[in-house]
Amino acid sequence: MSQFSILYYKFISWLRVMLGKMIFWILLIFIITYVSLLFFPKKTFRFMGMIIAPVVRLYIKRRIALGLEDKYRYTERFGLPSKERSSGELVWIHAVSVGETISVIPIIEKIKNENNNINILLTTTTLTAAKQVEEKLKDLVIHQYLPFDVFKWIRRFVKYWKPSVALFVESELWPNTLYYLHEKDIPIYLLNVRISKKSLNRMKFVNKYLKIQPFSLFRTIYAPSDELKKELKQLGAREVLVVPNMKTISRKLPVNLENSKNIKNQISNRKTWIAVSTHPGEEETILEAHKLIKQTYPEILTVIAIRHPNRANDILEFCKNSNISATTYTNSESKESIDEEVYIIDKIGCLGDFFENIKIVFVGGSLVPNIGGHNFLEPLNFDCNVATGPYIDNFRDIYPEVQNMCKILKNKNETYEFVIGSLKNDSSIIFKKKTNSKEKWEEIVRHILHVSLKTL
Image (cartoon, rainbow, N blue to C red; front, side):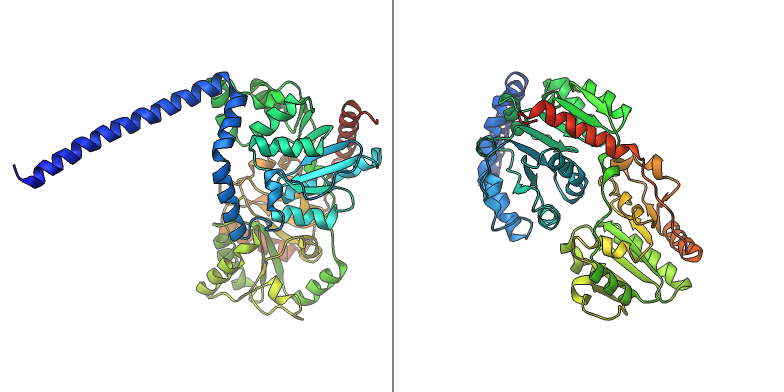
């Protein structure tokens, strides 16, 4: 046997031993983690948070480099406050991103109407949501970024702000946060709960094999359907009440009259439609539909409001490769007219200005799976002709109320037919909300405040 063969067999033998040891340690870690979560879930989540804290710090640095985190306020993500807490009782509301932030505005206004002396702490996780808070709510709330779910950061955050009650919006289930609030007897409410089927199946698995029931930590959960109520009760929820979707009480998006007038002048007499909140994989369909529409209306202007403005250059490049002329809103705000075929909105907070002038709207996040759709009520509030895609899990409970005013489109051909039909018809719908939704949510807020705060 050659020297090479001997070395080879020695290496294979060593590799087998190492793989065996590795498999052993992996299995051991898995068993220890499983047993710990089964019998000591609170302590296990705290320990896991301590282990991943250094990784989270590196992750935040990466997000800062990518422009996804506020480089001046990132320490808030470690539970370090950047503002002073005023004396008096405080209501903590957590809304993840822009949609949740806008939907919670009527709730905030109702709290202030009940007692203007109540402090409201509003936490979010995204830069775009923080910007919305600054523009719309800076005089009503204290804004902070939500700390990552590491126990020592959450403990620091809660000890400083001392909330009397916590209101979480839609689907935020952070174990260390929930366990610590529950441990401190701070009542937690889940408003407008939203959970995908995939997440529900995952939670059923966790409930079955680990007996972990995060929904049991909420005093009351407000769900938009009886079906979801049944699922939540099976997952350990104590009290679930079926109420109208909170997005149905959202106000009309704000309109800047000067910007709206400028957009009107830029569009002039061109036939125009807009696709909003689009994601990767959807712009291709929108632009293919644009090519079809252009055969009937050569001067058609397609406006695309991408969900994440940092993708603007990608869309410009895609348009260039498709021989479609395009420009962005930030580069064209001062222009008197738009001569390009595609107008890309790469700015947050101006959709109301466009809905005021463009009455044919497609709402994205719905042509591709695993996003769940976006809020088609926003353009309906402007009496626009509205369509969305088939993947609207986030709004299944609302859609039956508006199905006669919001079409479902599955591809470029159906999008073409919708736009062409809307242009030829040249008429808008009149959207009427359910009148009792606002009163119901005001009653809910009043009840939560009266059972949670000492001053009421």
